[in-house]
Image 1 (cartoon, rainbow, N blue to C red):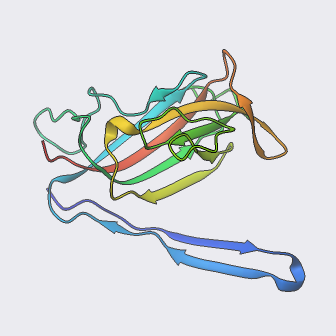
Image 2 (image 1 turned 90 degrees about the vertical axis):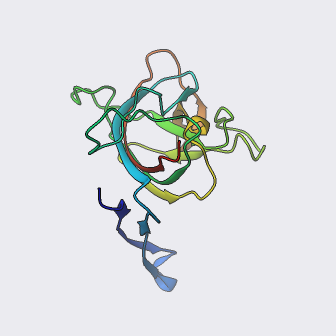
Image 3 (image 1 turned 180 degrees about the horizontal axis):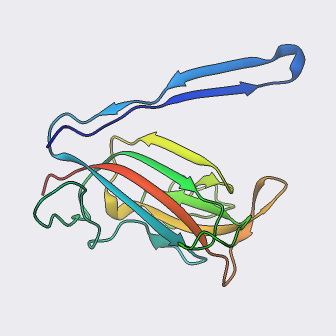
Length: 172
């Protein structure tokens, strides 16, 4: 199997008009060997902190069953907040998603390094190279959003469908 790689471009316009700045760049990752493999999945996040990777997740393009081992390192990950509540993708939502990769539950109001989350609003996508994280350490939880920032933990029924593509080192 070919070595897994991901290539992307970024472009942001920031700052007030009189000092407008454009940040352009890339986010690329190429696995060092054939042990770096893709996992792709859709996952429904709810109001309780859940692991986003499971031992039932399988690597793509492998002819024999190759289930994920939760101690496998995540090398690159892209997560999209679809803006929908479930896999039918017919009910939209404005509920946010909080993510951590420390093994700790994400908290919308934490100043603790382990709980400080990555925040995704509806339609947001994030791509990260994470040199030191295990599949078992990735957690997600829903959150209420007010004025563009997390304002409270999600309540029962606050479900969000996320889409995940990750390159994980299948070293086990």
